[in-house]
Length: 453
Image (tube, rainbow, N blue to C red; front, side, top):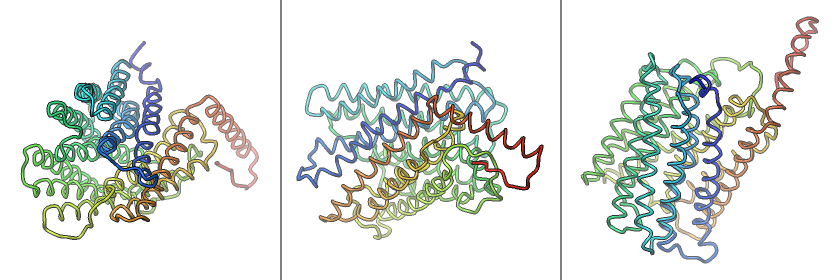
């Protein structure tokens, strides 16, 4: 089979399915359980603290990471006009990442046993190998392309590089855990890993796709390309500063500077993309996917602005420059990024892209409405009560965990349904009817508007 044949396959499907399964079975479910435990009179002992850390890794590399990897394998060759020759690297990277996450999760869950250290170390090795295969495969696509400097392409290249760095940092964290027989990852190293994965790997790919596809879908005004480059530079410098500061065990101020620079870069990108401004014109095209996907995407970027401002204030407090933010109880700032920005963005983009890729319909749009509302409520509760240790605060946080879990289940139902034969058949029938009606209107003008939905 030729390279064109491979690139025409829908190899993103297993990534999306695996991403959703990990989110439901390991990520959101574990997070909800940890938040609900106090309401049931259960103490959060060290066993559940280890679960909270492995939950975070499952969310970053499993839920968001695998979803983005699947989309990247599909769109990056199209952005760079260069095909991936064989499907083996894609499938290999997916299974390596899945295996790495399962070994890491199992190792931390069994931290009291002699199996914990080797399981955690193996998890780190496998996940790093998966990210390395992913990065090198896409770098080969970039290498063969003649266009590497566009506003979208520079972010994709950044995401590829940071994906491999994130895998390497995770390997370092897990190897140190195994050597020290530590149930938890080293705090400062883990912080560098989390923000490198969030800003460097995940957000870079999101920004790249936004600069190309989302701009077109939402008919955004022309991008501020110079600000886009400045945004990219700030995030790179910020992440490098953060990683050096944390892994070299430098003073807190160094890491704070890195986080502030990365946050400023994210804020500048939102301004450069102009996604929170009105569209440049009306959207007139045949309706595909979720009708209100644009609201989700704009909401996600609004959460990115809020999260970046909160992170700047937190970093200033940590550096003893200010004393503004209260003590965090349940990582509300991190959840603004992961739930508010990343999850809502994936909901919005996927509810448009999957039907476009598949040629399918989302037949129960109310499920997407409900999923979006539930995730938004979950984030609002995390922010409102994540700084307060009280009975009502614990109840609100427990509710936020359960609400978010139901939200991801509803989205999973929509995504799985959009990749079925019945959804594709429904789209084909609607498209054929639209073409017939439009052709008839052209032959016999009636003056009545054509229903594009």
